Length: 86
Image 1 (cartoon, one colour):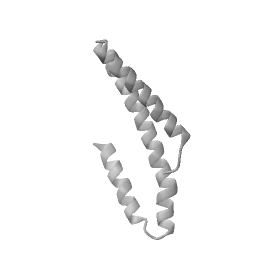
Image 2 (cartoon, one colour):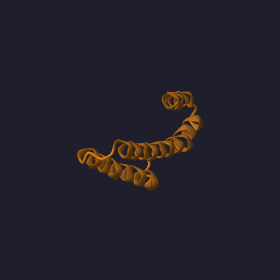
Image 3 (cartoon, helix red, strand yellow):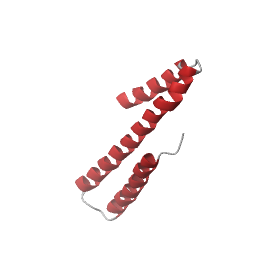
Image 4 (cartoon, rainbow, N blue to C red):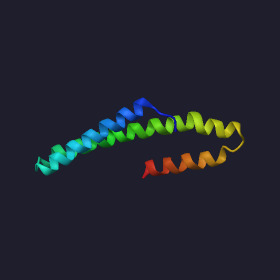
């Protein structure tokens, strides 16, 4: 995977938010506030993951088709989509 600054920024922001959530739990903060922050982290991680998948399709899958072995890449993508659908 090639370095993607936008993905790195999303992941670093997620890391900071997770650290903040841990402090919230340690400080016995209100449950709903903690839950909202967890949802915010999940949204950032989902966005980062979708960007990674998008890049994979545009680069790796495209290259695999050009080289004549795209079927295995389709299986990989279908597996990921299946996990999203759960």
